[in-house]
Length: 146
Image (cartoon, rainbow, N blue to C red; front, side, top):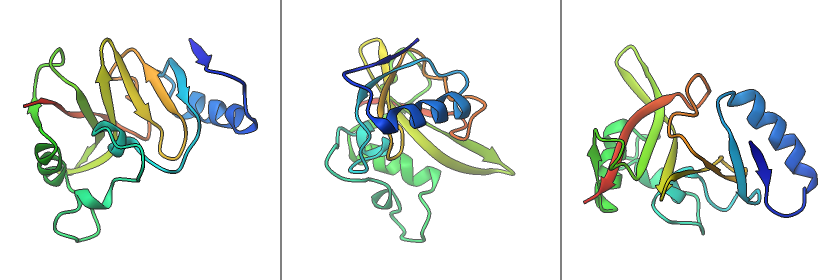
């Protein structure tokens, strides 16, 4: 199921093909047009007027570490939860040789998950784990409001 809100701008078909190739398990609806103003991490905390990634890097070493994401979400009023039914945010990525590399974040609202695709579209998808087997990786950690 892929639905488009409004007309189909020229970039839409290119992004649509990219989403199909890169995220084979993703069934989605496009809710908001392509924009470079904000990204997935910004969207998870309700920010749509700026890109958020560097502010996760508390120690300013050039990387946003897994533990820094936990601190970041704590400062924004969220705590880790193992219970998917309580989850409002999920971060995705890879664990390789003990290193955790965060690649994406999504936010739940009601029964739907919302993902801002980098500088691409804002998507709505039903399942949290739709990015498995993709460059976004697997669900790493879920958060709920404190």
